[in-house]
Length: 462
Image (cartoon, rainbow, N blue to C red; front, top):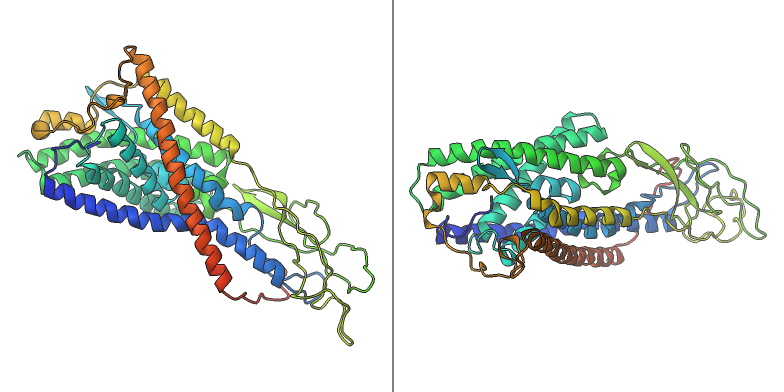
């Protein structure tokens, strides 16, 4: 659905360019929150570890989030760049939908569900920018039209439908897959309706609006089925192995709980008797003295891991004997060593994702349908393309997804696809890492300026 130059007149192109710029700016701010959510959790753990106190044996103060949640933003930033590269690669795989017509992934639903709606808008925008600049796909003056239609509309509509369906369905992994299918299916005809509205305001050819609407929505309903299948398969595959990496599935995991049970701790001369060490009541692991054993629920499965809680049973300055008349263990505990958080590596996901993108763009794309996509077919059949203009980058070395001066079509297209994946991955990852770092710096500054919040006592769960 890449709109070329000349389809939409200059005033409307400028207006949609302004809308796209505002949407990207808003998405940058929103992406800081989406990519920086883990930073807040890390701060919560640190403050809880220093401020929790013990009221009685067998109970600990509130500890906050423990486990790998603190590193969520650090993992999401590079994965967002991978999502952009994957969308670029899959968009090269045109699939037939009707006689003489093909379709391809738009990617708004996939990006929104995997990395969040704001970050998803940026992912698709990066893809459209790389396609327009390097491959002469989608006009440069029409870049605002394409971002508004293919990045903003598809992402917003898809994520709204996705969240609405999750509220009505059981909290299961299968619900995420089903909701992603329906959301992607709806997003494609929604983009077709949006293009029709834009064309009604600034179309350069005099064509019946009813004919444009009927043709666009009709063919893109069929394309939406392919979009839905690709989105559901991809989301379902990631949810099956790493649900913690799917933004849209984060609310489906069970709340982390830390329960306590008495554990014998060797007495230290001159120090008060420490409080019991927190242990999980579900699936216990072993941690050094003073550490917290936490269970993290991922897709309904719990596993024990050592959380970073250097003084979960300690008061603010408890390292001395109990005061006269005060029960041992009240606001006192032995100093303990911090236990490193156990993290699940994303390297395997990264490697598999990059390999899949390279395979799609470098090999499978050669077998993609050569028929025009939905917009090209509708434009040709209805005369919308009468005033279409040549792309400013038509003589680019990578124009039309082929490397210039390489005569072998298979090699030329495959090499161009691999270059595109690499360029999109580099630009996307760089952008999201910068956004993530700015979010982390802002969160650190806010945490440093804010006083510590006292934590509740005598809580059996955190």
